[in-house]
Image (tube, rainbow, N blue to C red):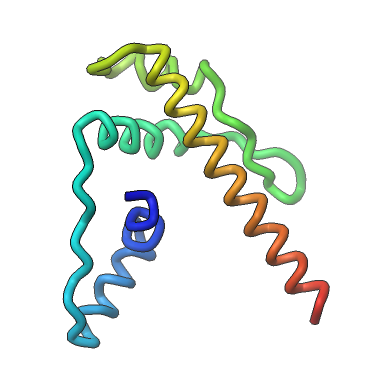
Length: 113
């Protein structure tokens, strides 16, 4: 599910779908996502929109429990709050690790030129 979201979600996803359509390639089927996973991914997408950044490089700061509280102030969740917090924070840790790796690759590529 995460691979599909990375490639086909958002603006880049619309371009990828359009490109496949123009090349007469079959559409990539969306993965089956259960309700809980879908709720977590949707919540993470909304919560992370308010992310704070630091420094001249714009390093993304980790989400906080306060960020989650702000989200939950207007929404109810269908499962345990502790599990919800853990899932959101784990997803955020994974995203920030991916971001750091992408920055490292870009710096390595820039340094080799």
